[in-house]
Length: 368
Image (cartoon, rainbow, N blue to C red; front, side, top):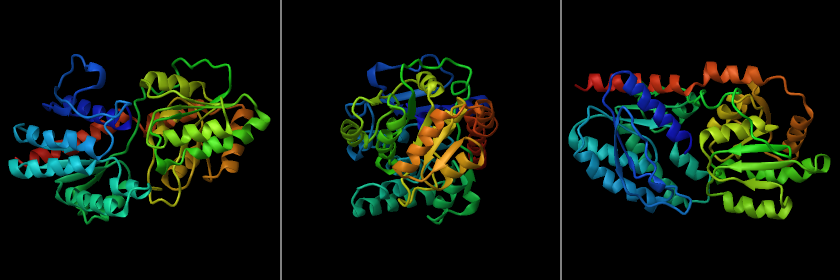
């Protein structure tokens, strides 16, 4: 459950709407979940998962990638589409070479850049960069979700004619201001999605004690999980006990309800880690619900928020963040309709899926 799943669903919907026969090669869903009746094929295979049900870490990735290599060898296709991680892209590149068919790499981010913002050893980052470069250069086409991601991809010597930009977005039928808002006795701020080291979400927990000097009942609610969650839990217990709630992974409609009821949504990217080009989907999900965004950091995400009236972009600093959180509690918000309309006009996931599907259809036609 997350941005990648939504993006890939939109892509499949766009391909099916264009008349393509689609086969999804994926994992066996945790808990035996089923997609139900769908107008496309699904091939599932068991995979190693962490205690939270996620596929995260090299051994777990390989538990998918190795079987996927053989599954793809026997799977007929005009074109294959791969998402990160690059290890999966490598499997797709090799199997596509053996089957003599093109593949498209859907670059939602640049994996090696994200790794360089964490505590992963340099040798691992270097190895992943070489794998990622190999995959990107051999793809018939690379679809990037933003101009900034495209610029990062181009650094791997990917020719401009094989690089296409398709904007990212959210499902506006879910993330909109019309639905139900979550009820809470305390004023709260909502953080939804991945909680990783490179995002630096600890800045919000560190800001909360300052906010509580003026609003003692204010709290933060995290929905999602990630590698930085244990550290955040420990920090919250130390600086704001009882005021930071970790709700785990929730369905999209439930996340939207919590966003609608929040004083503001919290989004961050730790600056200076080589990942300032990212535009987190969290921004679009919150603004789609009409909720103001407090973005802590610099770069593309900060610009999207500041330049389009989606909220407040501030330094990745507890005092700056606290001031923005206090202002959100004090301000009579009148911009909900404008924010949601901007997302509908500029960040519709359905439109992004259709655009990506058109790129892939072109690759399939020209390869015949």
